[in-house]
Image (spheres, rainbow, N blue to C red):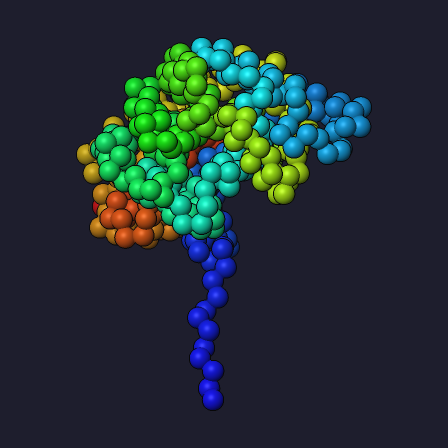
Length: 398
């Protein structure tokens, strides 16, 4: 008797799409770029230069002189770094934060993954504004958690009322990113507060990923959530030291929330990485204590590039390009071509020596906005380079 065939096996990683940065890098493999038109990489939002020399020197001395640099450390991070970050956040946001509410993670992606592991079970739901950060969507897919898309408006901002209509008994959290990846939008403090009140009223967690907070164009605190006496019952703050201090290779991030939730986070970290990098944590600690002025200079440079890109897209407006979002490391643009963004992004490699990401990598499959937009990440391109980007886009035949 013929046995019925088993359904095809799908692993957790089969459940999601290919990693966008990896995919885009394949587009430039084996491509020769003209000598007068070298590749400008606008695909990845990460600094490529080393940390400042003073920080590298401190890291080297720590590596050579401190045996603990080579050993396991506390699962939730160095006590000194947890205390320093808590104090820094309390000052920046004019709120109350203690070291017991801080966990240090191996990058902000791990902070998000740990939060999801501590909050969700199989078949639960998490609301993500679209366009979303692709790694958030990928992790939810690989965790058996449904990502519920919340479309943003023409200003790239999500609507709390629309989010409220998406909440079901399986909803566990709402996720915001500000300044946003991929759109660059800086969410007004009142909007963040409205989402907080919604989450609080419905017994949900509000996760706010503020990886790019050091490059926010606004002065003062971006929101007032830390000033609530019971903020940690609802609010989960995620942060990355990688962008501020150029520590991407050292993988140092943070989660700030209720100590009770960190008990679950501790289990996750202990199982995955055991502890964050000791050298990376030392670098983050040194950065907080000594590099405030340097980071402010980095912010000024990013804001100058932001202004240059805004001016440049003013030149492209009559060619049909539209700048939909701009902030931190990102520009989110609507293109004027008949072809879809995926095809255009690959054509830009050959016709303009530009590596960009199509918006189809940031929205659900079938979402028509994915065909019309590109994300440009400009952290590694100075103002002169951005002027060249504009020139190359202007030269493309429409």
